[in-house]
Length: 244
Image 1 (tube, rainbow, N blue to C red):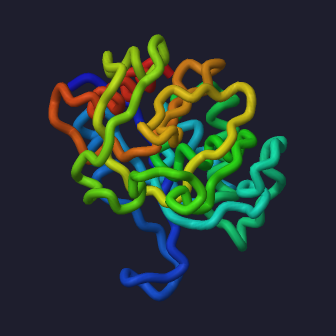
Image 2 (cartoon, rainbow, N blue to C red):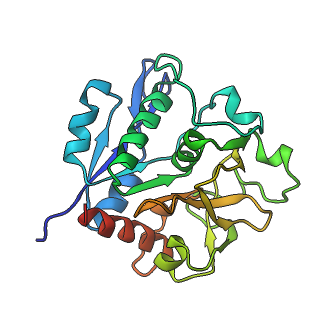
């Protein structure tokens, strides 16, 4: 069997919940299944700051996954800003670790795939601002959070020709699922919008100065049938990891 590239998948964090009343990591198995089926070797990454360099030395690419938590207030004000200030790891453990990890990954030009919240954090770290509630703050007729179950497509997107996403999927339109309450409002220079929903909500972003830095607002890991455009995204990401 050809050697599989090692794909780090950042774990999500829960302060408490049905699994445990104490802080714990949690992530759906679909991320790991998607990486394995596409030819990668997935490993989960906890928020161990002292071990960050060791993780970076052992992985070939990084996935930042979905999640649901509030961003810093400055990310919602709609004003242009620089990269995020220092974030408290006590108040926002995932965000503090993730933004530091993203910067190291980009510094090494390691392939990076942000999914849903992971895409938003990549954008927010670089200076994007957000709608706190896309259903209330825009005139959309799409329920981006609950339009349909996450394992079903909910709306189409239009993909920018000649973008990385277009080259991967071979499509200018495709159907995607949806499960997000927030959405990107503004983006800084250096980040390209490469897909939008019919209501104009940003659905994919790319950082063109890097060889593979892609964020998608939907969850491609739910659709793993061979030949599916969503699986093609994961496969292209794995292929890029092989070149690391």
